[in-house]
Amino acid sequence: MKAWQNNIRRVVPYTPGEQPKETDVIKLNTNENPYPPSPRLLEVKQNLDELRLYPDPEAKDLVHAIASYHGLGDNQVFVGVGSDDVLAMSFLTFFNSGMPVYFPDITYSFYDVWADLFRIPYQTKALNESFEIVASDYYEKNGGVVFPNPNAPTGRLLGVDVVEDIIAHNRDVIVIVDEAYIDFGGVSALSLIDKYENLLVVRTFSKSRSLAGMRIGYAMGNEDLIKALNDVKYSFNSYTMNCQTILFGVESIKDDDYFKETVAKVVATREWFQEELKRLSFNFVKSDSNFVFASHPFVAAKDIFEAAKKEKIYVRYFDKPRIDNYLRISIGTDKQMKVLVEFLKTFLNM
Ligand SMILES: *Cc1c(COP(=O)(O)O)cnc(C)c1O
Image (cartoon, rainbow, N blue to C red; front, side, top):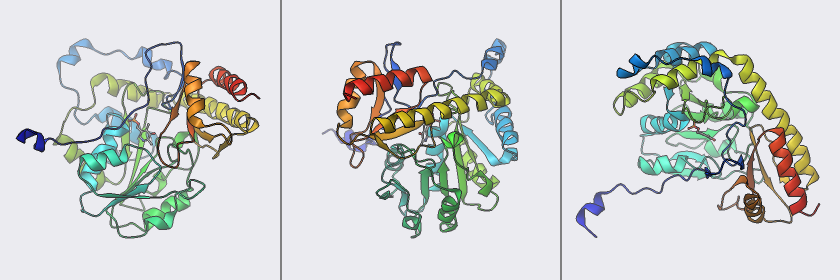
């Protein structure tokens, strides 16, 4: 081993879902929205000369659009390159006590990666048998708390009263509620940010706004938290949001009718799909997100996953303790989900 090799920051990176090269696949493995973003984005014109200049480091237009949409002040919103960027910045900014940060054992698999990257100690808290977060597990003194609501990959929603209970028991640390899927169901914790100065709510344009390719995420909280985040961001890279992204983000927020319409379509398909899954004897937690986390009593998830892939239907399989017999299936269009259901009927011999 060379001496310099001892000084490399070694990390086991996050593994994103597969992005197959072929275009004729049914892609239900990374929770992307099956519908395109608002057609109004096509009318947005980028002034070429403007690209000579650095973008607005504060991304003011986008911050303002998001803040107005949620009835907040501009100083209560922080934007970043996808919520992954926002969450990573939040770990770096808020989890510095040396005490372990708490998050569920089954959850977004980026949390432990950031904790390891930033040398933040952490402890996972086991979901109960029905995959629920148990609030009292988060009562002990800790270095911060983070969880998605609805949780991923389980899709299970926590009532806002339980979310508040966790926040109220952790007033000395920052509690991050990752609401990547909240637009598909459930009550947001956003109404609590004025009451709890230790609460940060994180959202993304990637799922409900069909803009995973643009990379837009944001955090909402009291102005001290937002300032702390911005100070860290400006100490790392001032220009994270590019000109085009800012324009598209603002336009997406403006077309609220389109947004609501596509979310409603995904929700309707999800409800139909869950009924079909029941008929095929799958077990699953009722989903409040744009995916369903399901397990079959007789056929191994891995076998279904592999067989589906041969038919060019991609779903997500996690080879991890407690969830290695589950499939996470993103909700596609009605047509895509019908093809999947037909495949399942044949494969399961039903
Ligand atoms: C998809 C997802 C994110 C990341 O989304 P971005 O594309 O980076 O905005 C964050 N948290 C959870 C729970 C997610 O599922």
